[in-house]
Image (cartoon, rainbow, N blue to C red):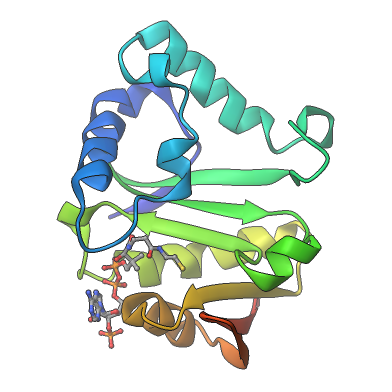
Amino acid sequence: MAELIDPTVRLRASFLAAVREFAEDRDYPTPWFVHDIEPPALTDPAAFAGYVARLLGERDEANRRAEWFVPMTTLWWAEADRMLGRVAVRHRLTAALEKEGGHIGYDVRPSARRRGHATAMLAAALPIARSLGIAQALLTCSETNTASRRVIEANGGRFIDAVGTKRRYWVPTS
Ligand SMILES: CC(C)(COP(=O)(O)OP(=O)(O)OC[C@H]1O[C@@H](n2cnc3c(N)ncnc32)[C@H](O)[C@@H]1OP(=O)(O)O)[C@@H](O)C(=O)NCCC(=O)NCCS
C-alpha cells in the first residue's frame, strides 16, 4: 500500500526515473519541483543526498531561501521502493500563493496516474496540514485540469472562485 514518506536517498533510482517521466510528459506542463532540482543531483549520488537534505531542511523557518519562500513540507508517495508522487504542504500563504499554488501542491508520475493515487495522497496530506495549524487548506488548479479538480472535490473541496485561469477551493483538513 502506498504511503507518504519523508524524501530519502533510498528511493534515488525510482525518484530519478520518475523525474525523467515528468520531463517527457506531454499531457501536463513539467512540474515546478522538477525544475527546482539542482542538475548535479540528477547524476551524482552525493549531490542527490544534498538535495534530499535540502528538501527536509525547507520545513524550517531558518532555511528559507528567499523572502518570498515559505517553509514547506515535501513528502513522497511511495509503495515499497517505488516513488509514485510527491506532495508539498506550504506552511502559510503569501499573496502570490493565495492567487496560485495555495497550501498544497501534488504531482503523480505519469506511469502511476489514473489509479487514485493523487486522491489518496491529498487525503493523506490533509492531516499533515492540520498538524501545521492549517484548519482549511487553500487548493488551486487550472480550469483545464479536470483530474486535479476531481482530486480536490473528492477531498471535500469547497469552490471559492475562479481567478484568471485558476479555480480556488477551501479543503477542510479534518
Ligand atoms: C493531476 C494528477 C495529480 C492526477 O493524478 P492521478 O493519480 O492520476 O489522479 P487520480 O487517479 O486520483 O484521479 C482523480 C480523478 O481524475 C480523473 N482523471 C485522472 N486523469 C484524468 C485525465 N487526464 N482526464 C480526465 N480525468 C482524469 C480520474 O478518473 C479520477 O476521477 P474520479 O475521482 O471521478 O474517478 C496527475 O495527472 C498529475 O500529476 N498531473 C501533473 C501535475 C498536476 O497537474 N498537478 C496538480 C496541480 S494543481
